[in-house]
Length: 191
Image (cartoon, rainbow, N blue to C red; front, side, top):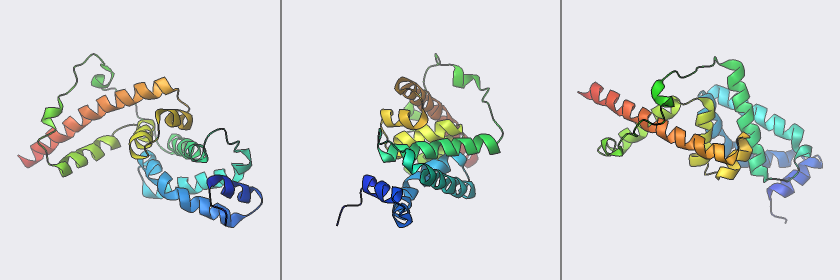
């Protein structure tokens, strides 16, 4: 029996085998859902976007050229579908926070974060990630949670590799500020 690689599955789907597409869905839904949920921030919406993603993949499977891995191809479709969903269904919020744009500002010291218990740090991180815009959340999810390379992130998002690096740097800086704010907010609650 031939190993069920993505290439094999795609060839079977192109030949009309819907059951092999079910295998593709089973293989990727658990990988794509966390990224989509990070972007849309609502479970029902994430499920709806997932359905749209797999419909798009099914309709466009003949267009997959193999220039990149199928994984990168399907992540790109998921990313674009989730971002499109956000743009259509949610109002655009623009951060006017000067500290976000002040790149000369001295970075926060991680020492103020270290004393916290691990669970409190994770909660602060999760709350901080929620405050990022959808594109930033997607990039964080792809690079840190899905462990995609800079090059893969570039292909998936359509952003140049150097811009991916710059955005990740800025996101880390922003997250550090947000985490510090969350920690201070938490300390005021418990005081």
